Length: 228
Image (tube, rainbow, N blue to C red; front, side, top):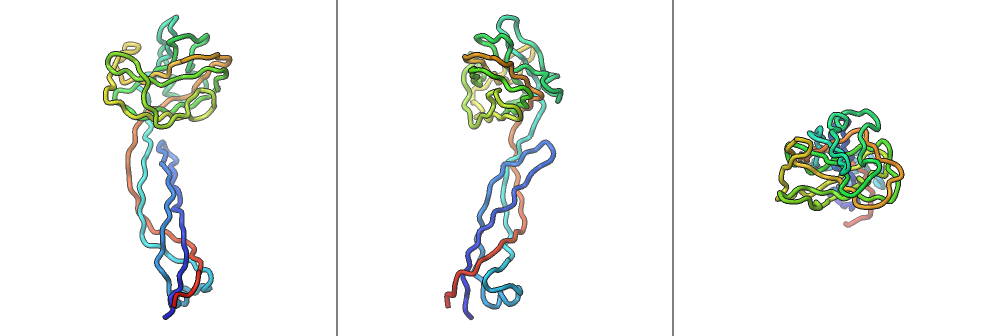
């Protein structure tokens, strides 16, 4: 029986969540075994283009588990720290100032949790404008220092969701802000002008949870030629 070689690529459909979890999406390419003339006949398709079932496949993903923040404080070096924890945990538009106005050295915004976390998610309602920049810091037991960043889209200058992923520091230590002993990240103002004050709607922090799925996929095969 002659055997026909065919070429096949498939991208597993991306899974999405409609609740508070967001899936980490990755495409997969799966190869399919050779088909024979008998396979073509039994499946009832043209020998030039054929849809065939794939082997069972499995894939893994990471879930971004969103949690309410335990602390959210605006740092204004001139007046002190202002508690915005309740506002950060509700969806009221534009009720969380991310930088004071006017802004100065050592100003910024603290986000805290009772346990260490890998990312923060900020829903910006009013985008900041100006030349300002911020840097993310953590407390290492003696001083505030820059945290290592995996991914960051939180410059306060774009409306919508911005996420900052960090590498959890080995020396991350709880400290007290606003009377609360937490693990804190500090979005510190570095320099530049602020012509429009950035305002947030809601803030989350969280970690990853891993999972695995399995299923059966289908794809389209294209006849390439006769091997004998």
